[in-house]
Amino acid sequence: MNWFRKKKDVEPTTVIEFQPQACTHTWQDFPWYIEDQYSGETSEVWIKEPYVCIHCGERKDEILCHRRTSGMSHNDHMQRLKDWAEEYKDHIKPRPIVEDMIYDMKYVDRERLQKFRNYKLGEDKNVPCLRVSRLEPKKN
Image 1 (cartoon, one colour):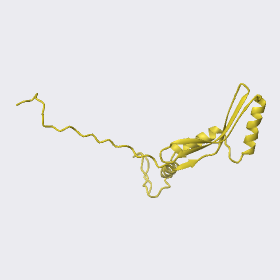
Image 2: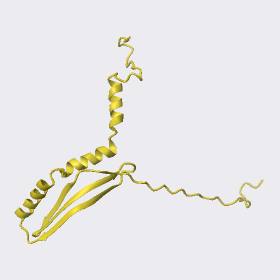
Image 3: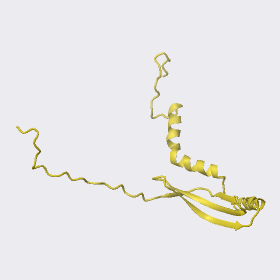
Image 4: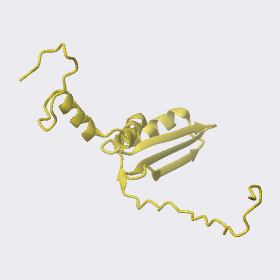
């Protein structure tokens, strides 16, 4: 027996690589938000609208409006922010609220949570109630 001898008649292993399929995005839009920057008498203000894919969670923020002005005081910059917020008040939300909406969409399954609540409260008639302890009286 040749235990330590290499086998010469073994064919090389073929490796097949599978490429993940690209997501065919279905985008959900969210409320607009304002971003601003003020530095050295230069004012920049953006209005952005985020889009998030409902399948893979990819996000892209589209710029709806952008203004850059040099030689502007900080008070004028703040007034521009107030004016834009008032002008587009039906569309603009504070950024933390928009971010929370996006995270909720990505991470929270509201339908599943509601089903669990119904089950826990005994409102789901398709699932029998489970007794937690033998010491509890049996409900008929």
